Structures are given as C-alpha cells and as structure tokens.
Image (cartoon, rainbow, N blue to C red; front, side, top):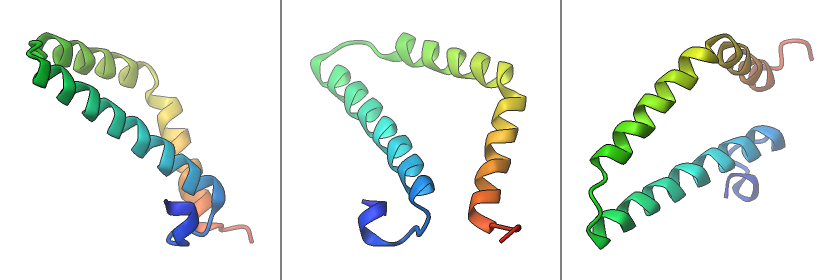
Length: 79
C-alpha cells in the first residue's frame, strides 16, 4: 500500500513498514479468530508479552542501531 501510494518515497522503508503492518494484522486476525472460536487467549497473550520483553531486552542495542539506521534513511544527511 505504501509503495503504490507514494506516501513514503523510500522503497526500502516502505517495504519495512508494509511487512511490520502485515505481521501486526495477521497477529490481530489470529488472536481474534481464537477468541471467536472460544479459546482462552490470556495465557497466550501473557506468553507473547513475556517473550517480547525478553527478546526486546536482549536486543536493545541492535534495536537502537536499527532505529538509528531508519532515521538515517529518512533524513539522508550525507546526500
């Protein structure tokens, strides 16, 4: 969507945002489907949160560098 609408001019950033949006959408649809079927999702969501926190804490430096790279792509200070 972002690549075809020209909202974001950088192709790589557009792909990244599209992939992140797709992952969030699929996760939301999956959890909503489980709730509709009648599965208790509290323990699943708790596990996802704990796993996300653990991975986030372990990859804090990598995430910082990744976000800095995104800002460099957006701002293009060396061009």
